[in-house]
Amino acid sequence: MSRTLEPATSASVVRRVVAGLPAYDPGADPDEVATLSGAARVIKLSNNESPFGVSPAAAEAVRLRLARGVSRYPDPTGKRLAEAIGKSLTVPAERIILGNGSENILELLCQAVLDPGDLVTTQAPGFSLHEIFPRMVGARVEKVPVTAEFGFDAAAWRHALAAGPKLVFLANPCNPTGAMLSVGELERIVADTSKSALLVLDEAYCEFARPDPDYPDGLAVLHGQDRPWMVLRTFSKAYGLAGVRVGFGVASDATLVQALDRVRAPYNVNQLAQDAAIAALGDRAHLADTVRRTGREIARVTDMLRRAGFRVAPSSANFVFIDTSCRSDRVAEELHRAGIIVKAWREPGYENFIRASLSLPEDNDIFVRCLMEICAKG
Ligand SMILES: *Cc1c(COP(=O)(O)O)cnc(C)c1O
Image 1 (tube, helix red, strand yellow):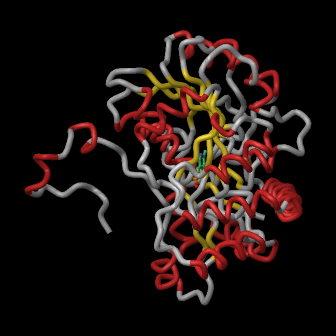
Image 2: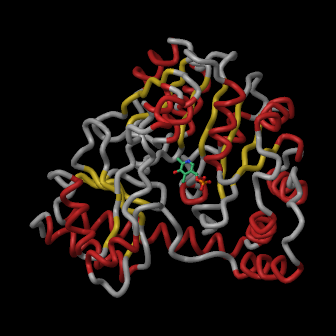
């Protein structure tokens, strides 16, 4: 299946920057992998989803809403959800923006803040939408590499921030490495970022990292800073709601939320998603259980892989970034034949890496065994 834009009559109307954009890579299609492998059950480790499902309360909220009917448009401001989030974080609801996934908010930020030619600074390796959305509006993107040990390169960041970006996208923990910035490292980035730049902290995986005392609460670090900032979070990962699409941002001030509202589609978060998120937020036990079980698997699988001789980045998230020592697209292809989907990394310098999100223990064992066989290790 080709994702390139074919020469066609429509080619002449497509904006030049759009024609030149890299395509987002969602990973292999589970139906295609099922056919290719003949596996009765595909093990999908490609999108950092939760194997532990959603809170039963969230599932019940969706059922209830369906029973009451969905013929009306959703609440365009999502005020009940924004208030519930605000209450849980002790932030006024007027500083919260909701999105059709936090990806939606990344897009809104680019549309509201960036002019063509503006500079955006982010990480490498990194989350592709931190690059694709800025480029979509004609901005330039500079990526700051991690150290050889997947750590934060303070000197490289200071240098990059001195170039005066308009917007900084920083994921903590980082996707795809899973590595986290410490309190001190984050404070350093904040200090080195110009007060006229918008600093966006993408905390899609914060729930998994929080048990580590050295993991900074982005809201606490940015609170009271005299600068524009936003912290992004999502219900897609630890809350297990990737399929309904809902995320949120906490802004430095209500004015930034109002700017995003101007470029936002009015009904961007559907009613089922709003209801599910409110219920999920109220179920602390389900979240704690997901975080505890994920942490156990991360430690166990990282240890198994390292014993087998693989280099694995230290992960504070729900996935591992693995150096396979051979071309990752070939490794991924072999895994697909065995009915296991991972993401082959393609950024320069990381062509030997795969990213695998962890699943239930028995599936993780199958994955590790297959990977060892393919790479002839262990
Ligand atoms: C998964 C992810 C997101 C967003 O996911 P949504 O489903 O759109 O909320 C955002 N940032 C990073 C770094 C991610 O890995």
